[in-house]
Length: 303
Length: 280
Image 1 (cartoon, rainbow over the protein chains, first blue to last red):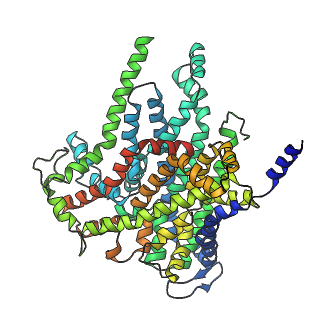
Image 2 (spheres, one colour):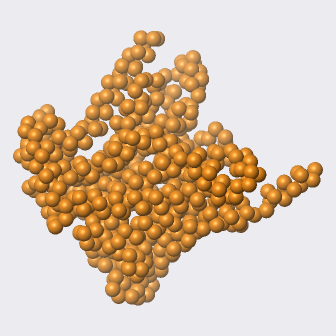
Image 3 (tube, helix red, strand yellow):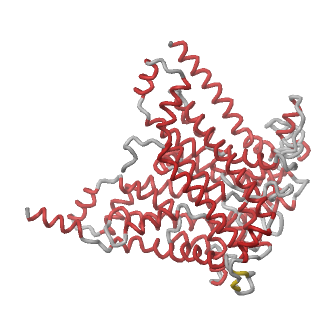
């Protein structure tokens, strides 16, 4: 009895050593994340270059963004197109490959390694340079098209195609989404598939009624992560096409960078970054709010 | 039935192999092209050069200006290695603090830490730049190293918390009874058991920092301090239209460290990704 009481008291007591262990994070969070986060909101109501101190201008930046900046709307448009093409394509592809790998076959690790390799190179400049070569006017892809008798495509030089060429680079790096899906598929009990077979369900029905519902937590997670990344894509658009041709790949990240570090419109760029933040939060919130309707958790969603 | 399954498997193997070739062909083509003449790069589809030349490497290594790629590799390591060490050590300490102690405001702090995962870099980059500028850190590697030492990559904290929670609490308790204090529990029990997590965090962080382009672009402005990502872009701008094989050869070289690490540490990759799920 006594020892149980003592134990209870020990459990309830705070151990301040914990604060000591997390103190590096507290300092780092305050100085390198929270302060910049608030500062950029404050900056967004000012105008300043690097050399001049901020001058308060109220809502002027935001008014200009929404009423007097055609480039903003162009950039927002191509960014949304990019997000809505690249993310679903990447996830669909990753899920499909994970399902094929999940058939009990040998050498799964070998294939997984091969498919994962492009993802390691991520948003590196080297990969962007490679893409530039592959899709150049006389690049490998066009040579291939000519060889099989198809007309060549101006992958990077035409405003119609450039954004898709960049999206393709994103899809090529489906590796980490695939690994997450594969882990999820491995958790689905085999009995479910056996039962479906006994009931005479076809492949498509099995996919729609068993695989897809049970994999929704992974779809949810991948969707959030990939969306947050895609909204901020920078390197590929900056290195491969530099936002062109005719601003057809002028993704939001490129626009913020140019305004801040080429035009030195720090206040305006901060306002742009907050508009992006609000848009991203809106999309994320939409996914979160809708998730109870389409995600399925074995524990009923209560943990 | 059995024949059906076998046919499925054969189809799967063929599909996976064809796709595998499509996936890595660009990389193999890059490898081959670095040894080709500039003329051949744009006139052949094959990987193997008709005439093997090492011009691309020899001349490319000289770099686009007064510094060689040796310097750029050196800079990259100088930037990346302390950043990785700082990230791993600080994240492990913080994860231990979150996972094993009760302290005031823990819930709020934890929620803050998780919400950091969603904080877009684009929103904080301008004030950060101004901050580092006023501290006199521009054109040094401090903007990379110091924030890492203060555990600003909350993704890795989250990942390690997941791992720490998998270590039985009884281990801590028995060590405590044996006279260990909380720090010796961390260094003698947690660190050895967390090794896989520390490795995966280190590997991911290495590769991400190695490939990073936007941050160096903003913080580093003299060629002397350029990491590889900036050097490659400079080479690209300068060699426009002529020395393709040099650019290819140097691109290839910069890919080698991440790929090597990936091959030698694969199981940590898979573990890291499947415990937390991941971007990239």
